[in-house]
Amino acid sequence: MNVNYLTRSLMFVPAHREHLLDKAIGTDADVLLLDLEDSCQPSENKVKARDNIVRYINAGKFNGRILFPRVNERMSGEMLKDISALTVDGVKGFMYPKATCGEDIYFFGKLLETFECEKGFPIGTFQIIPLIETPGALLKITDICTACPNRVVAIAFGHLDYVTELRGRHDKEGRSISMARAMIAAGARACGVVPIDTIHPFDVHDLVDLEKQLNIGKDLGYEGMLVLNPIELPLVHKYYSPSEKEVSDAKRILHLYQEAEKNGSGVAIMDGTYIGPPIVKQAELVIEKQKLIDKK
Image (cartoon, rainbow, N blue to C red; front, side):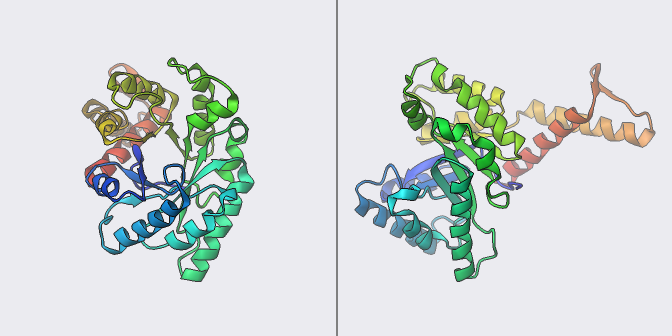
């Protein structure tokens, strides 16, 4: 399913805390993950969070923002309340936590379909971003990505629960999550789904380590990153946005390739390098992303 909005940064915001909602509105995060789950304890805060989101939407405070509330997990007793309240205009979709298998996502998609029918929304209106947080889910990554092909637009890695379930260690070098990061990115890309990297594993103020993690994530093929603090946004956007040189090179590649086709030469060369279909595809993706950034 094509994504026609930016997914460089997906920032968690505890939805029961109004001052944090107000602060999030003032950031340039691409997607706001309005949290109803882990950060909303005890259960009274979940009610407040749902009410806050609806009230802010009705007041127009989220106008122009991409909203994906993170609902509570399937066995919590809260998920149905979440989607009943929040399948409304202004919500793009939902983050599904602790996805374990494709059946989870299929079930969730059917729940969304029920509310779409009841409320008069076109089927498929609300999208899904599953969160991979366990070793078992990692081994079923393609099933999760393909369970609702008309809804699943991205898949994100949640490393904290993953390492706990693995009974591994939260090591500074990232050895415990390196395999999972690679598998999630590859699995998502294999299914045409956008991969989103886990939060910065350590101190949010350690921007040196954040930059290191961004380099790794980009090398692995991730399209964006989960964010906890607005201080991280400038670096995240820098790494997941094309540079001026990348945009310039992409335009040259497309021009030379089109000229070669027009002239019937069959081969385009830029700076001594042959321009084949994979390079053309990459150039097209760079231009598409830059267009989305320019529109923001």
